Each structure stands twice: as C-alpha cells, then as structure tokens.
Amino acid sequence: MRSKRLLFVTLPVIWTNTALAQPVPGDVFKDHHWLPEMVHHEAGRFLRIGGRLDYKINEGHFPADRHIDGYIPLHTYVSLKDAIRAELLVEKIGSHEDTKNLRVSFNGHPFHLVPEAEGIPAPEADYMHHTNPIVAIPLDQLTEGTSNTFKFEVDPEQRWDWPQNLVYATTLRIYYNRDDDKSLRPRISSLKDGDTLADTTPLAIDQAGGNIRHIDYIAYSDDVNWEGDGLYQRWHYFYFRGRIIHHIGRSADYPYEVIWDTSWMPDQDSGIKVVALITDNQGVTTMTEAIEDLRLDRNYSVELCKPYNQPKNWVTREDEFSANFDLNTSPDTITAARLLWTSWSPCYANGIYLNGQLVSEETGPCYEYMAHNVSLYDFDIFKVGQNTITTGKEPLHDGNMVHGMEVQWPGVMVLVRSEK
Image 1 (cartoon, rainbow, N blue to C red):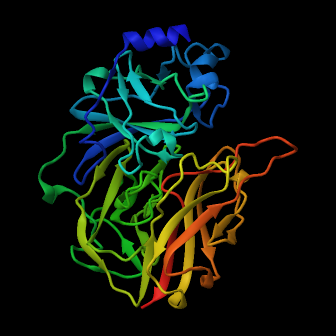
Image 2 (tube, rainbow, N blue to C red):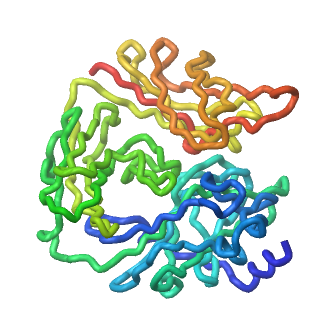
Image 3 (spheres, rainbow, N blue to C red):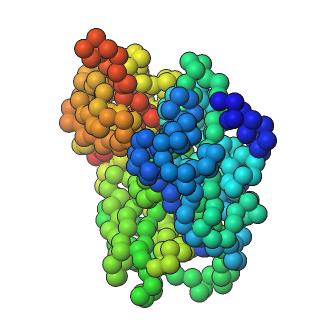
C-alpha cells in the first residue's frame, strides 16, 4: 500500500480533454486491443483494480514481464507515423459502489482520469454500471513499437474499505491523417439520404477488393441504451472483450452485406443515420460518410419506455428494488413486448416483476456480464401511465449471503409494439 501511495504522488492526476473522443464519419484509425489474459489470478476474465484483490498485489505470482510496478505491457506494435491523436477505450464495470476516480497512466507518465458517463447521475460511483468510457492519451506519452505499457489505479478510500472496478479489456485507438476528398472515400451503396427503411434492409458498400478484413455497420438513432451511459440518442455499439457488439452487424465475406432489421427500432422523432466501419487486413479502419435522414414507414408502432427513479447500488442481495417507466400505448393495442437490461452475475437473480406480477425468472452466468432480452406475453399487466419494475431480493444460500444480480444503468428498459 505504501508504494502505491508514493507512486500516486510522483505521477499526478491530470484531466484530459475528451471532446474529440470516439470516431466520426471520415476518420481513419487502428485499434490495439488488450484482454486480461495471464496478468493476475483471474486470468482471461477481468482485471480487478483496487482493494484487496487489486491486480498489482498479485504480480509476485507471475513472470516479471507480465507487469512491473503495475504497468501492463500492450505488446502489439503501435505505429505513430502520421498519427494525429490517440485515445483509450476502457471496458469498465463499476463493481463496488463508491469506487472513485479510475485513472490510467501510459509509460510512466501522469495519470489521466477516466471520464464518467454523461447520462449517469453524479456521483456515478453510487450506481451499478458497465460502460465504455474513452480518455484521450497525448501522443507524446506513447512510443513507436511494442514497448508501450499502461497502469490503472482508483482512489484507496471507499465506504466499506474495498474499492474495486473491473476491466474486461482496453482498446488503444490511434487516429491517422485522412483523405479530405470525400468523393474518394467508400460509401454505403444500398441507401441514399432520405430513404425509407423497410423492416429488413440490406447494407453494402460501393467498393470491393482483396484488402478488406471485415465491415461493421452502426446506426445513429433513439434506441435501447445497451452502452450503459444512459444516452439513448447516439451511435449504437458496444465493446465487450475487445469485440464490437450491439450494433447492426458484421460481414467478413464479399460482398460484405448485412441485413439491417429495424422491426424493433423505436419510433423516431428525427432522422436515422448509418455508417460502415471498414477494417482492412492491416487492421486499419475507415469510417464511411453517414447516410442521413433515414425514416421508418410502417403500419405498427414501437414505443421505447425509458426507466427512471433508478435506485442506487441495485444489487439484489441488498434488497427488493424498484424503478418506473411510463407507457403511452393502450394495452389493448399491444401485439408484442420485451424487457431489456444488462446485468452482472445474473445467476443470483430472483425474479423480475411488472406491476407486482412475475414476468421473468431468467438467470445467467455467475460473476459475468449478460445482456437480457425477454419477451412478454401477458399485456394486461401493463397500464397507461406509470408502471413499476421490481427485482426480487436474493435469499441466503445455506445461511450465507451471496453476491446478487447487479442491474446496470440505465435499468430495465421496455419495448412495446402495437397496432396503429
């Protein structure tokens, strides 16, 4: 503990401008993924940062090149030629409430505070969350080649003396100069600005070649917040263990077509956008220009019911917790409905209730992330106006308290499809 405090003194924390974080159409970048394999006693699962199981405490059990003084080798080759900026995406789970100020240092330089999510109330540390925060890293703190290392810390103070964040992976993203002539950039060829989307729409690009590894398609819309930051109107995608998920889809084979299913996309107040992320065989990704002002025209309606009154520290071992959502759709017109939420350690779930009625007994893995998408069939449970979602309290197991399911921010979302 003493050496950790001394290091904190010699490497001050600095705030980093994150206004340029995340790629935008036209950007060119390369991702360098790191996963927590063989760096601590929970190899291949996640990295524990802080408290009695901090990854740095266990470094004596592994070869010296795994991490020296808490610095973890990235190992992949980082090219800085023509680089214009860099950022680190962190796959962060809040884990223990009141864990504050996650920060990262590269190559012995000052620590950078990892920003909190814009859509989670302050203090973010009081709410269960799993997010992909991004922090800008100055290029002069990185080195060309395979020698880059990074280190995580959190504040040692926590209300019950066990601060802890979990990290599933990190992505160091290096941005490069791009071609400013938009006419030379690849584009999505199957749509044009202002088009109307069918329930299923094929997506493809306007070029082919032997230097494409895969293409990912992502949309900007008002939709389910799988990203955990509470922002519903955004580019929708998420990174888990270094792989993009919760997006439209990926194709790794010519002609790189993906079928875009919008049948559960909520009704939109503004236009939808879509882009392609084209990754070549060298791992360099180009983000195409966006196809904009796309519209939905269908004979049904989909309402996204966004939860509110989210409780702090929503872990089912602690208590029975409730949150609310508003429904504007008459239950008589509902034809399908879904509950959607993300959790951690759902093996300890003890039922989800809608307005007092049990609607889900879904469980899942222990001490792991899960995205839930549960269909409902009894629509009479719904009511116009305020509705209540409740999780049951996890009972003792053989007289002992267990972890409980964490319900991650923004809580349990509800999609309702109805006749027009």
